[in-house]
Each structure stands twice: as structure tokens, then as C-alpha cells.
Image 1 (cartoon, rainbow, N blue to C red):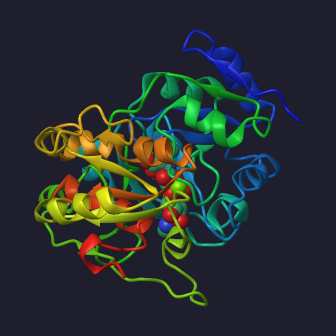
Image 2: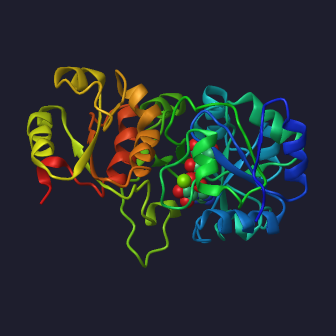
Length: 341
Ligand code: TXA
Ligand code: MG
């Protein structure tokens, strides 16, 4: 078993050295913590799948600290990519681009002719990649199937003993993973909603953008392979509660013999006198704070095995709300309180 070291932002040199040696280092970004390995070292990349328990046909994001790093792997940078880089990089936007044949190992691409590139905002991570001198793969640093980690402690909980270290730069600010836009196709297509919205991307590109709402079946080769697997699922059943269903949902909770966790906006906790209830987790004031706190809340209740159900606030699926609801629906298996059996 490895000893997993926590690196502060003053110890980036040491963390970068570990990456160069083929070790795994988790890193902070504005969205969630990623699990880093030298993207040009196939053995190191393979160990990422092992550490996460992730199926190996699911390709990995290539995390870069400059546009030059991307340029190395593609024949040429499409104009659309340059426009989006100008507008949103560094930031929570990942772009899927056609790459040169065999420019990256199959362990990174899952055998696709494309790769997903992302430049995160976090300064410590930019410096980590620069010092490592290579792009690093960056799936979320959780065990496969669990909510993505938004603190170094979440990463430690899931991956302690399986990775060499974690670069700790405090809680992430956005809280849901980056938007993924596929630019390898005729029409730009959103494969995963995130903090950069479909509307923003369409405005910058000056063209219509598709959204892939397709659900991939078990035997199908998926376009964004992550869509195939169960995601963000805590042990307890999650029920989505729309604003007007709290009366009913909290009445059900009060009658239930087992403990039920609640994840709700401050105003709801206030209104129902639940502010000091230890089984209630505040999502703050709005969809921004809710997105930042969603995964941490799901993990909070996962640590408590007496809770066998969680009621969690639904929001309108526009702007950042689309990203929040995408993650919440996956963790709830798409179950709304009003439709539960
Ligand atoms: O915010 C984020 O993107 C975080 C932070 C750590 O950067 N990373 C992240 O990685 O969420 P991951 O591996 O958990 O999700 C990446 C998604 C997966 O669903 C994967 O299938 C998809 O990106 N993906 C990777 N390469 C792809 C490609 N060439 N074409 C389509 N989808 C791809
Ligand atoms: Mg993930």
C-alpha cells in the first residue's frame, strides 16, 4: 500500500516530480479534483483506471497548461476551438478535438480518434503541469460511481493508499465538472452540461449548438463513454424535490421510521424550522451555491449509513441549472419525489 501524501501549494515541485516518475497525483481545479498522471506515459495512465476502479473503455480528459500543449496532438487547431479558447480558457470547458493518428495512447483515448482537452483555472495546477512538462490525464478523482470530489479530503477518502499524493488547494468553487463540447463533428455538440452554458457557446461560435440528451444503452459504443455508467450515486436513494413539493416531502419524512436526509436551499430550511437539524444540509441561496455544494452534500450523507433516503432540491434546467440537474438526476436515477413508488 502507498502512503498518500498531501502536498500544499508550496510543494508543487515535489508533486510534479512524482508525476514525472509515473506516479498518480490528484489536483485541484475550479470544478472538481482530478486524478493526474503523465498523459504520455501509458503505464501511468493505466494505473489511473485501476485506482478509480473505472472501466477502461472510458476515455480520459487531457489536462493542459497552454494551447501549445494541445497543438502538439492535433493536425491543426480548428477555428471554432480557438474562439472558445479565447472566450473560456482557462476555465470549465473541455473540447473534444480530432487528434493525429496515434498521438496519444489508447489508454487515454479509449481507441477514439479524438481526445478531450481542458485547461483549468487553478494556478497551482497550471504550475504543476508546467513543472511536470507534460499534459496530465484528469478524470475526477473519485472511486468510479461515487460523487466527484470537491475537496482534498474527499479524494483522500476514496483513494488513500492507491495514489502517491494530493495537491490540496481547498474546496473547489464551481463544484460540477466542466462542460464538454464536441468539435470533431460537423455541428458543435454539448456532451455534458457545465458552468459554461450552451447559450454562451452558441453566442461565441455564432452558430447553433446541439445538445446530446441521448441515453446510451448497455451494448452501444457511447460517444461520451461516461454516459454509460451509473454516476454520482450515494448509498441512500435520492429523491428530487421541486419547490412546490416540499410540504408533501417533509410530511412523508416526518412519518418515516428511518432517518431521511434533506438537501435544500436556506429559505426552505428556514421556512420549515430545519436550520439546526443535523440531517439537513444547506445548499445555500441559489443554483450557484447549490452546484458548489451538491457533491459534498451527497458525500455528507453517504458517511452516515443511518440515512437511507435523501430529499434534494430540484431547480429549473436553464443556465447552470442544466448542469446541476444533470448530476442530480443521475444520482437520483431520475426519481422525483412526486413519482416515487
Ligand atoms: O471538470 C472536469 O472536467 C473534471 C476535472 C478534474 O477536470 N474532469 C472530469 O473527468 O470530469 P471525467 O473523466 O470524470 O469526465 C470526463 C468525461 C467522461 O465522461 C469521458 O467519457 C468523456 O469526458 N470523454 C473523454 N474523452 C472523450 C472523447 N474523446 N470524446 C468524448 N468524450 C470524451
Ligand atoms: Mg467523473
